[in-house]
Image (cartoon, rainbow, N blue to C red; front, side, top):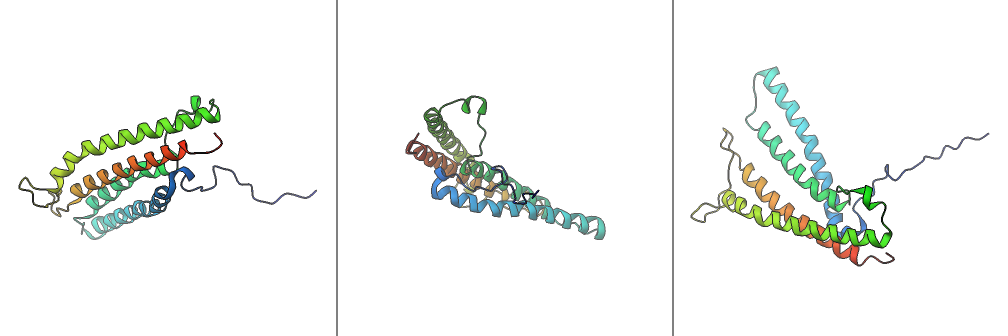
Length: 186
């Protein structure tokens, strides 16, 4: 008897990248995801360095913790956009899987349109926080800082990043809604 040695591939094992309906924006977001994954890995390196410097040499840094907080915050915020571009967001599959292909298409359009509207509303609501974090009451540009000994502008940058990601997320869901609507054969 011969043994089949060809590797078995499963859908869950393959990295499919951005959903086809996500368009060019989805492909860009999918590619950018690698950078945010590397940011998480760099956080581990930074914290390892901090432990060595603090406990091995009694020379702690003033920047390690705030840098790690900023990088992980941005990575987690980006994660929502990344999940949307890959069509990996949370869905109630108990109902969704029971639907016919045309009904799924209608659900996909409706869900994407509702998510686009919600993200646009969240972006609009975050504008007040961003305005306070970026401009002084007199109108001069000044990013909000952490107030620590290092005092980086990471709180202001995080708020700006959140606004940008929410706007991109609203756009990504709008692209998904339009492309689901135009999807042939459903």
